[in-house]
Each structure stands twice: as C-alpha cells, then as structure tokens.
Image (tube, rainbow, N blue to C red; front, side):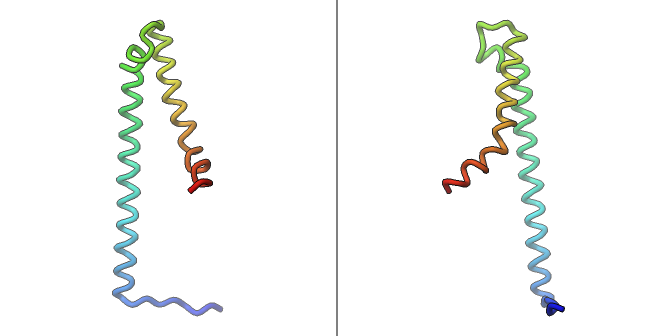
Amino acid sequence: MPPSLSLTPAEEAERAGQLRRGALSGLLGTAVEFYDFLVYGTVAALVSGELFFPGADPAVGTVAAFGTFAAGYVARPLGPCCCSRWA
C-alpha cells in the first residue's frame, strides 16, 4: 500500500486556488474561442461572400465563404499535432 499524501491546510488552500484559477482560465478561453467562431461565422454568412468573391453568384460566394470557415474547423486540431514536432 503506498503511503498516503497528506497536505497541510496551507497546501490544500493553495491547491484549491490553483484548481479554481485553472478552471476559470479554461472557461474564459472557451468563451473567447466561442465568441471568435460565432463572429467569424456571422461575417462569413453576411459579408465575406460578397467581399472576397465579388464576381461569383451570391449563393456561390456564401458557400465559398463557409468553405473557408470549414477549413478553419478542419485545420484547428491539426495545428498542434503538426507544429509540436518542430517545437
């Protein structure tokens, strides 16, 4: 049986503070990321098709804008996998 780890009250309070700080950081990061994708999706639907694909049919421009949005979703999980090799 491994020896039990007993923490002093000060160490327990510090650990609880670190856990709270980590949870808050994760929550804020997720909220900012959600807002970023929400704004980009709205802009892709309303503006990007006309702005970046002016010669295309409006429906085709909107689909192309959403295609770039989809490319961001696909590439997002690949970034850490590919870039961590060179870090």
